[in-house]
Length: 461
Image 1: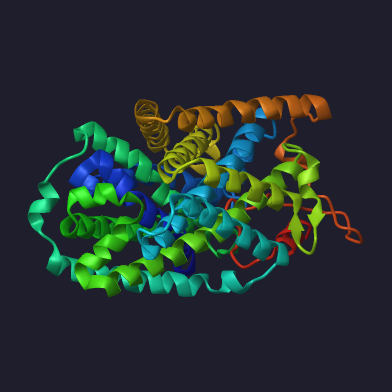
Image 2: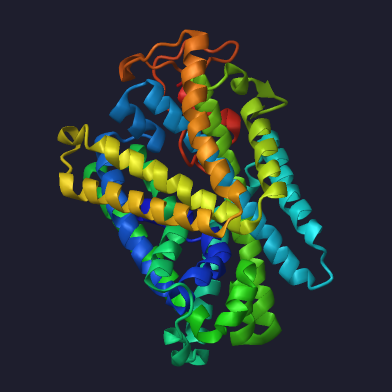
């Protein structure tokens, strides 16, 4: 349980905190900590749903497995998994854009604006090559990165408590109550890593009791850290500076508490966090695409092996993320990422209502999760439409509609019929492998440090 809790903390306490606080402050003003709190409460009900599902259906499959149990292997499940694949691509572009923002902050005013897009695309390409090589180096460093980040953020909170000006916490600004809820919807993505804990259920001795405790503990720890860090930021950095330097405001807060050294240390931690998130999320996206293709929800061509342990799904993911980084700013991909995961988690909770007799879940927390996810989705979508550019929300709506249309047309073209869970297709075996006797879907957030070949081998065991 302790290991699973640490896994959840590592999955949540990362790049989102470094990239979205400043953007949230544009809507919530000095009440960003309140927005974090509301987002955490909204995530609480989704955690309840995931913990019940994970305890009843322990596997490494995560949301993909839950959707399969809830809706069966038909157009609904397939469309949601295709959209989930797109959601992870958008999330990867958010972390790549965040990485470039902190590089820009360290480089100074001489750094041209176009170079930020190049840096963002470059970090995606680098980690695509890492995944192609099947390297475990970055994965083995994940624990070290989390420990270093925790130490830096802990020191920042302590120093910030002495430097903070309490009057700034009630300064206001933003768009009032609606702005706070808009910021909460944007910050929801900072808690989306709780789903990774469900992927550890298959390794637990008593998942029925250990999984819920681990998920709620991880959420509580991260919510507390987010609340303290955001309070320290608002207390030490003027609101005008937060709005002006939205992409790297945490580094500005580091400079306020410890001068140039604080700025560099926080920026360095942000680079570690965002680079790590790019690696992990790109790996997850490519495996989700691979798994969807293996189930005939996407083209089978995505399952073809490239070079050593890479797949066509990885290359397609790389190209898609690079396009997003080049053509969408940080604010746009931040909105799209939160909108995507609000929709995915809302769908999982809605589907949970269909099978709650199997999980023993109560109806009211699931209904609350659906309502909160839907309400935050509507609020954030309205803000995206109001503030523009139109390409942001049109691209998101296009991804939703495109997922449904693609899955429907693809099934008709290939003749794929809806199957029950017991008749799921397994991953295509590699030459020389025995026919798969049992398979599990790819994890929404695979084990970091596993090579792609390791991941496929697990599914054909």
